Length: 121
Image (cartoon, rainbow, N blue to C red; front, side, top):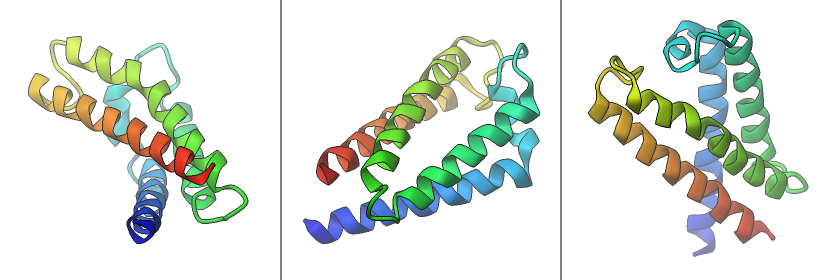
């Protein structure tokens, strides 16, 4: 079980760092999910930085539990955006079905972050 936990943590760390850098490489990819009243580029860059920090934190023993909690909380913070996306005529995920799948993934990510946090305490 410890091996699965270790791989799970490093897989999540790698995913968060990669996705965080993707925010800088292709910021317009994230624009459709951001409501119009937010400054899209700023929100994209800030969320990218936070994701990179969380990913790196998952690899540093003294920061792992905080990074795992941060991961779960960030996914909770993004949850309203994914719920909102389902209600739109043209979801950012291209289809309503895609938006529902993304919402399910969001809950998986929340649970994954919480599992890591609990395991690290």
